[in-house]
Image (cartoon, rainbow, N blue to C red; front, side):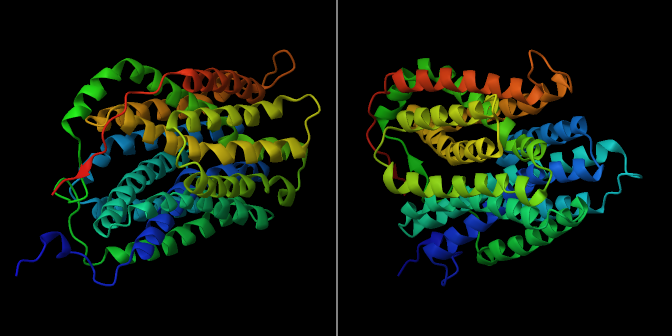
Length: 416
C-alpha cells in the first residue's frame, strides 16, 4: 500500500482550525506589531520628546521601504516557507525589543529608522510565508474556505497594539515598545507550534493550481487593463497610509489625554477585523472589481472627513472606522482580481501590484515630510496629504467601478 508523500510531513493532530489560528496569530504579530505598532506610539513618543515629527515620517517611510524589500526577497523561502515564517516572527520580536532599548540621548538618529526598516522586511516575510504554508495545509485538508479568516489577524493585531497603547498611554513610550516586544515573542511561540515536524511546502506542493489551456488566452486578453490595476493599487497604498500612520497624531492635536486620542487606533483595527469577516461572509459573490471600487470609495470618505473645518474628535473616530474598515477588504479584493485577470501568470502581476502599493505607502509619509511644518491656504501637511489621497482614491474607484469585467475563465483544478 503506497502512502501519499505529501502526508509524510503533516503532524497528525493538526486541524484546519489550528492552522487558521496559527496563521491568524502570525499575521497579528507581523502586521499589528511589525508594521503598525509605530502608529499609536508616534504621538506618545512626540509627547515624551524622544522623536520629532520629521523623524517620525522617516521611521514610517523606512518601515514601508523595508516591507517592499521583504516582499521582493520572500521568494528565497518559496521551497520552505516555514523557515521564512520562523525567521520573520523572530525578527519582528527582536526589532521591536531593540526599539525599546534605544536611548534617544545616546543612540544615533538613523538607528530607529533602520530597526523599523528591518521590522518591515520581517513582516513581509511573515505575510508571504504564513499565507503560503497555511493555505497549502488547508488545501491538503480540503478546507480552503478557512483561508480568508486567517486575514482577520491583521485587524486583531492592530487592535491589540492600539489597545495596549491606549490603556497604557500614560507610560513612557519605550515601556510600551518593550511590552509589545514581549507580546511578539509570545505570539511567535504560539504561531510556530504547529510547524513542528512539518516539511517543505513549495513548488511540489499538491495544492498548487494548474491553469487550464484557456487561461493563457484570457490572461493575454486582459493585459491591456493590467497597468491600470497596478496604478489603482498603488494609489490605494498612498490613500490609506496617511491616516494609517498619522491618525492618532491628528487626534492628539484635538485632545492631549492619551486615554482619548489613543482610542483612534483600536477603532481602526476593530473595523479592519470586522470588515474582513463581513466581506468573507456576505460579499463573496460580488465581482472583485466592484468590491474593490466600493472599498476605495468609502475609504475616500474617510480621508476627506479630517478636512472638515469644524473638525472634532468624533470626525477622526469616524475616519478611523471608514479607513480601517476598508483597507483590508481592498487588499483582498485587489489581489483576488489580479488572479482573475492573469490566472496563468498571476505572480508577475501580483509582484507589480505589491511594488506599486509599497511605493504609494512610501510616498505618503515622505509627502508629509517634504511639506514640513508650514501651512498653505490654511492647511497643514497632513491636511494636504489627506486631500491628495481623497482625490486619487475617488478617481481610481470610479475607474474600477466602470471598467469592463475580464473575460470569464474556466475554474482551475488542483494539480496532482
